[in-house]
Length: 264
Image 1 (cartoon, rainbow, N blue to C red):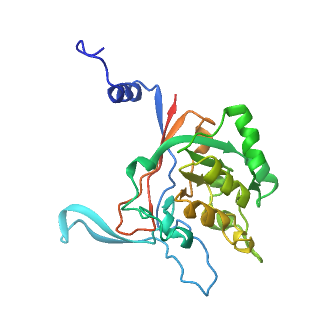
Image 2: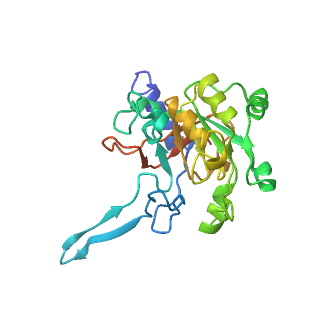
Image 3: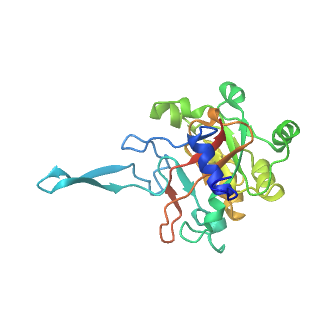
């Protein structure tokens, strides 16, 4: 009770945050000129890395203020993939960053830990069977949730290790086609989040169809979040993720600050 009145759930949330009974976990990597971007074959237009140009910094250009010009692709660093990002989602309604309902940016987190598998196999792909095994222990993945794939990939601190490029292309873990279909259609998730540079495996360009997670998720009106960190600070269930992109007109995606509310 507060002043004799029932405490509303939002007021209670703030009280729990202030009391330290709910943690705010930052799942976002630092965004700067050194942030790696995805490598595409030379035939395709590349995404630029971030460049930051100073406008003024407490000087003659602006004596009391500091600010910069940012130049970067929408899909840089920890970023959001909207359905319009992929050809399968291009004709869906409310498919861009400025038209997606804000309610869809918030959902419970289901964290699936495959770090041991990825340590032995950087090309590891999550399967429906593995998800169902996880569900036997933690419960069915609820509709409108975020499925976050914990791989340990964010511990790779150099661009070379993060991209993991070899003669046949990059190597990194993700979801099998069947798993993406299972999560999108049988579990009706909001989307998936990964620690890697993209939501598809490094070798996904050779899959059938190519880039099956993008193809499936965005075709179903679902989302993706990439380059997450600190997934080891979240429980398998019980946290809530807030992943709100910039409201870019007709935007295919956006860098974003992903936070999770988790039990202390």
